[in-house]
Image (cartoon, rainbow over all chains, first blue to last red; front, side):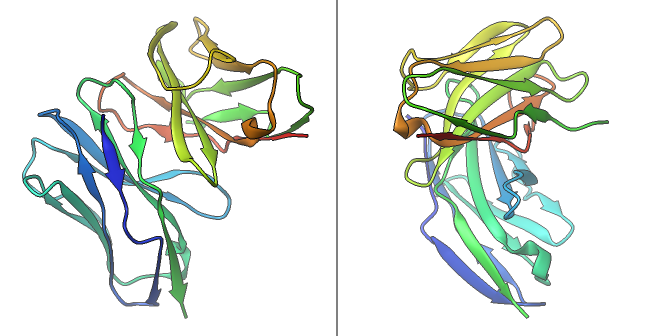
Length: 115
Length: 113
């Protein structure tokens, strides 16, 4: 079975500062995909970033970047220059190549951005 | 392009009733997946449909079922509702069935009394 663990239920950051959200996962698959999704109070899930496991280069999307450590099965999200609009629940998710369970999500990290 | 739409957005039912939720994917997307989100269990995968065929099914009882139509629209049905079925039900669509980014709808919030 595939599992995703987010060890930080809550995090806070000052506006304009940088914060890193942790995620570890477990899978027996050799190829898989990793995602970070954001869920603001509106409950609409929004893709933040996507990483293909066979690519060693860390994915980046504007102020968002990941630190993908395949051997350690770690996939952390770094948010630079935090903005008030970044406040949300952040979910790490995994999809194995076998696609047996589609997306497996972590429990989420609630991010608060302080002005 | 219009995003994923889900209807209805809110629903109140009583125990024992059944409910049908609808999801219209992004135009051109052929895969539709359903997830249940609750405070206790978090986000759990229900099932996935691709080209009208169920590809995967999560660990839910048979009371939960779904289908996909030829236009890729999908419905999920829950029969004999239980209090524990109260949740936010999210639908997501993607172009293909493996490794593609899933785009989520706004969800249907179901309350079972």
